[in-house]
Length: 197
Length: 197
Image (tube, rainbow over all chains, first blue to last red; front, top):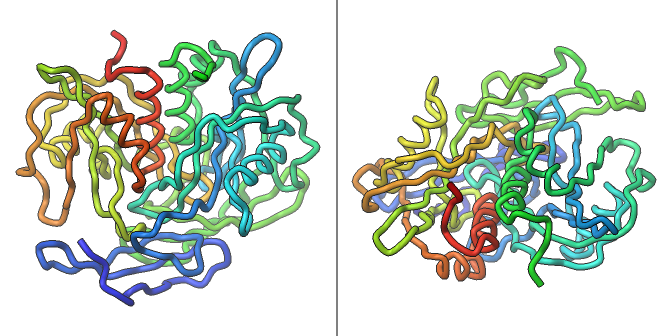
């Protein structure tokens, strides 16, 4: 499969999100068009490494009674409902992943990032539908959650879950982000909220 | 936060994917608009459970030399490049999740689903950008991979990874789906390609 050079067309002209169309040729020689959504003014369809649009932060909070997983609950307009997920947000221009993760964690929870445990490259949210990519960053943090750093438009509830809480939340009839549901499963399968040194 | 009734507007009129806009009101009383992408003709923004648009299948293949994780590599037009992920696809009308998972696994890999290990509810790919949801389904399967069930337009390479292969793939400079990268991390953290009974 290859994309036909210069065939990228912008189908809409909105501020935050647009639809694009490209022509492509299958190995069989058949041609087709593909439509996708992008937040980028000029999507780059090619072999260069992806740049993360966003950071998705999985925070382990160290407390005197053990680690807690920091989970968020936030109203999501496209779902028309609340979604359980993790602190996340768009990267500012020129910001590296660690800086963005530190800033978003502080803004959304009041907690302070102390250590990166593992970080993904830019990984795709749903590559048939959009080029949107995030860096998934597992971190340690300290502090007490507070809402003082939230901007006026953000309404985010923060939960500090112990292992039992993680197991129970995954079984709750609620809406989850796909990434968050798999992360909850990961910790459930590991059997504890710890990270190997 | 609430969505203002009847404010949903369809901004485009394409076949597979469209942009929509709704008005919403924050708890503070401030109003704003939100734009998002949807594959649905009539997105439903509300408290009802989500219906999965797609299935995302994490297959463990039982072999005489131990379990293998079945990973795919597929060209993704919005990325303009190949992406490592897992067998996945859109659900047909009226199809339940198990049937869709069995069909997609067979089409994309030639393997036969034998058992569901765990399944998520419909979980959101990136709920700021789209209402797209998938059921994430961990399964056991049997057989030998073959390409005989691929439709003419699909070009999907299948890899059978042992534990070392999983650890190595996650460190490969390549493009991954976000869900796949977290699943690879999950198995790496579990320390083996097994599923507790």
